[in-house]
Amino acid sequence: MPKIRFIEPDRILEVEAKAGDTLLEVAEEHGVKMGSACGGVCACSACHCWIRAGLPSLPEAEDAESDRLDMAFDVRPFSRLGCQVRVGTADLTVELTQESITTWFNEHPDQR
Image (cartoon, one colour):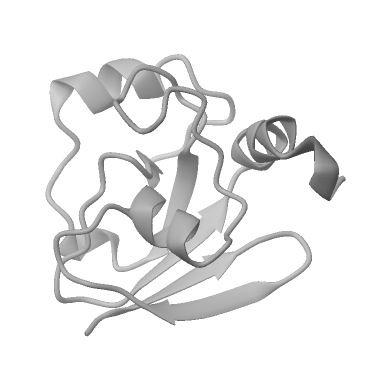
């Protein structure tokens, strides 16, 4: 099983993931602070993240994801949406953006 390393401002969490799951699904399963205002249907940019390692192993973003990333903050060449990236066989390192973390706290105000 591939390992996903999630980088949050206050911790780094490494988890095993099932191939075919989205990064957002893996994050939610393990309590990672990846926001998803739309529920993971590629209708917002709240799950915007940076793929710090393993990007070449992923397919390129499809048009819908690219269109949503145009609405995100601090987009970089290694930006992706967690709801659209499906785990393959390679390990990944994923850094959460402030945009995503802020959305997560808005969705979980009791965690502030």
